[in-house]
Amino acid sequence: MSSTSNTPTHHTSTIGAIGAPSRRNTELALLIFAVAIPVFAYANVGLALNDAVPAGLLGYGLGLGLLAGIAHLVVRKFAPYADPLLLPLATLLNGLGLVAIWRLDQSRLLQSIGVAGGKATNQLIYTAMGIGLFVAVLFFLKDHRTLQRYTYISMAASLVLLLLPLVPGLGADVYGAKIWISVGSFTIQPGEFAKIVLAIFFAGYLMVKRDALALASRRFMGLYLPRGRDLGPILVVWAISILILVFETDLGTSLLFFGMFVIMLYVATERTSWIVFGLLMSAAGAVGVASFEPHIQVRVQAWLDPMHEYVLSRTPGVTGVHSDQLQQALWAFGSGGTLGTGWGQGHSELIRFAANSDFILATFGEELGLAGIMAILLVYGLIVERGVRTALAARDPFGKLLAIGLSGAFALQVFVVAGGVMGLIPLTGMTMPFLAYGGSSVIANWALIGILIRISDTARRPAPTPAANPDAEMTQVVRPS
Image 1 (tube, rainbow, N blue to C red):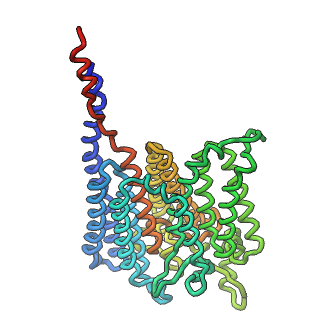
Image 2: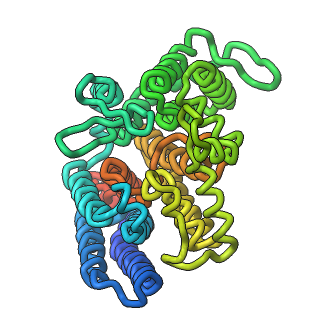
Image 3: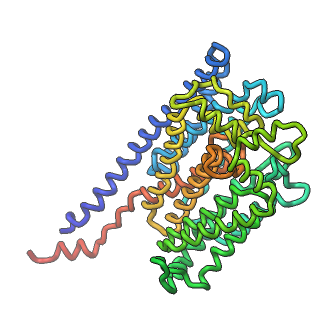
């Protein structure tokens, strides 16, 4: 009886021990594939633009491969049971983003207005910094549950990060949005890091308060309405998101933070009513602010009638801020058709100032077509799916909420950026994760992937075999047959 009772536990441990090297071998194979695709794309761009293989092809391939290899070795060492898809998927997107940025660097039009030239080199440096932070997360964060101790410190830190762009002399106004801070010759977007810190706070707070928030007072039109006194947290977060929208004129960040909180609140309480309240409150807040904020009004007008804004931007004597960027992006998508014009053969540089940042997805839409855009969105979808799978596998409620919060924030950012560039929703001013040019975005998103990998490793790690009980064994030995 003793040997039989110990068999299942020993069997599970053996499977886990065999499974870890298998996962890492799978990750390595996928990682090689994820590096090879951008290298092939880089060669195609060079051939299309100059009829020659780019001189920097070897350096680019070695650089991206070295960074990916370092990340793989760190995951193999410190998170051997983690999901094997997260690192290759992030590497693939980051590599393709570098190719698109380098392609736009070759544009004389963008060089003449100071948008292009050396941006790909800068982005590769930012990628190295991001993977450095990724390594630091896995090295120092041995257990994600330690983050729960810093719940309210995270709240304070996130508020500081969100308020920094409003500090006189530190904040910078870029294209009408006050979401940047200037440190010497560098500009930093604190909101990219605030989304991670806020997810930690929301996870810790909701884990403690979820039972109270799940209570309902009455039923209305098929929905269980929350109690009035429990509406406080969502009203506070809603008010903060509105203040961000008003003072920083940043629609994207306010939607991201409020949406992330509502998603985590729904997962914690399983109450559909929170989703309904969240959607109604976000819509009311956006409409209310848009009624008096000129910057938001311009973006809404450009969304409703992009062709009209295009004409006004080219009409002499017309005053006001009018942009042709959205219409140029829509033309780029239309020019791409189903299969695209081919790497390096599009004209997305006509978008000008935000061609390599907010509107970089238009470059992929024109040069890779609908098929390429769907493939890229599928990669983003796989990252979100693996994050949700990690949340389902997590053994502790804090890990579940943190994983779903980070995955939800990532998904919302992809939606608001892709939706804005494609004309589905008003432009938000956020950047496409991993693809777009920007140090803050790529560094913060590598940290996000690192935390998800840590949670995944903890969730998939087999439980340790319990120590044998000598008293039980002695009892079975002396028991008469």
